Length: 66
Image 1 (cartoon, helix red, strand yellow):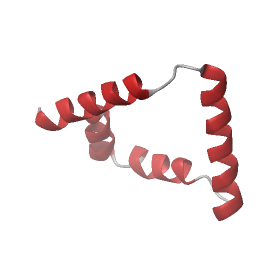
Image 2: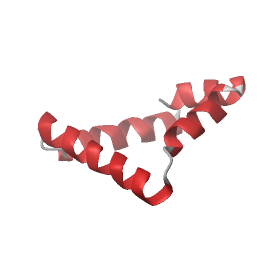
Image 3: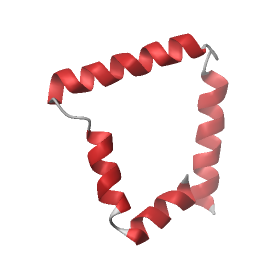
Image 4: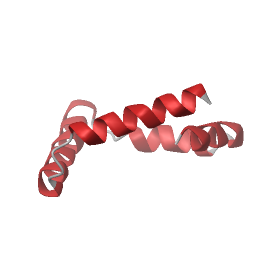
């Protein structure tokens, strides 16, 4: 429970610190996307997602923390 509440608190703090500008958020996400492709030529989030999905126990653990 402490881990879950820690994640929830961190999420709320991050939301409070954001400026709530969707256009800027999409622009930042696009920059991160292109930076990752430029540096590594891959999108590692997709690789990590496939790794987690193939391990049911790990997917359950991630779901609980999410």
